[in-house]
Image 1 (cartoon, one colour):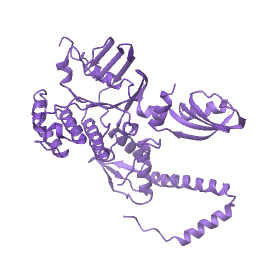
Image 2 (image 1 turned 180 degrees about the vertical axis):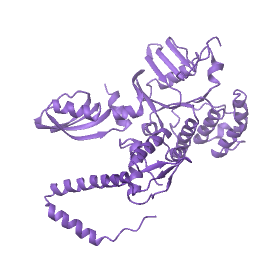
Image 3 (image 1 turned 90 degrees about the vertical axis):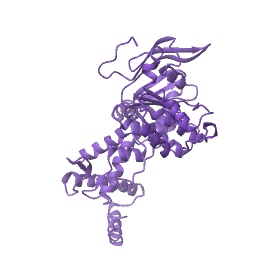
Length: 131
Length: 300
């Protein structure tokens, strides 16, 4: 699991971890059943406070993206679950909102935007999983 | 040791209203600070802010002129044995005995600490790539810092005190030091107190911070709370204005015309209501880095 932390841009570090894990799950780079690194291991690798990693894992757990198993360890949840699906829709909604805002600023009407999305959808082949 | 052994889990360090003068210069001005057990406490301040003076009080190297200092519930000046034996310390200038070899320094330091862990010390020596036969005076700056860190860590102290541990070091050595901080507190119940003016490092590893400026503590709080309660908001007013209208919680402001940006202490919701109260709309609301918070806070 590749995570990059920047302490300079103001976004709290636990939020950076949460967002990057969410993105990797939504994009398929992390799959259901994959194990996340133990808190201490990730803390040492990223050089961040272990409590920060623990807080990120708690947020991910309550968002339904990961689950703790009895044998200890944190695993990516089954993405068929309604919570996880809701999360994916939420991420996409943010992107769509940004796209709509930009289109409005450029005076591109809604129908043109929809047409553009359909065109691009046809052009881009289904992405093969990274790595 | 006349003082009773503390019960429950009292704070590791408790500083109460300490003032310290050197001649007519006030180095610490009515400083109160509590370092709870467990976690990493970051002491932030510029050069000459009073960080080192404060640390010297904790180590019992300076006696309080007014107020009181308590470490593990003991007075460090009266009980050097009861406190220093439980503290690992790396000073800013990393003053190590130059005439010794690394292995001699390890044996020498071991003699002072009953809790010295020989196996752990050897692991650190190998991990830090230190030649046991090298003379301390011939070590590079980075190897010297690693040696200082080794002797501070190897007795597995309850409290690790690092004064500007990263200053003047390259990124590889800094990573070793920050990694050591993280491993130290990952061991249950241990506490790290470190001072730094490299705020991105503090932001990475600290749980709790105190900002010191001109001998005074301007702010002390959990880092999460500091981050949550400082925002940069940009407000849009209905008409162009000559200067920024005052906003509740604002620490500084910049801008022109209809748009003004404030650095504020307060949470998002609170600031939004304050903006509405002066007839403005929030068009930007961002978290700040610790660096930005620090700079805003120390400005008069």
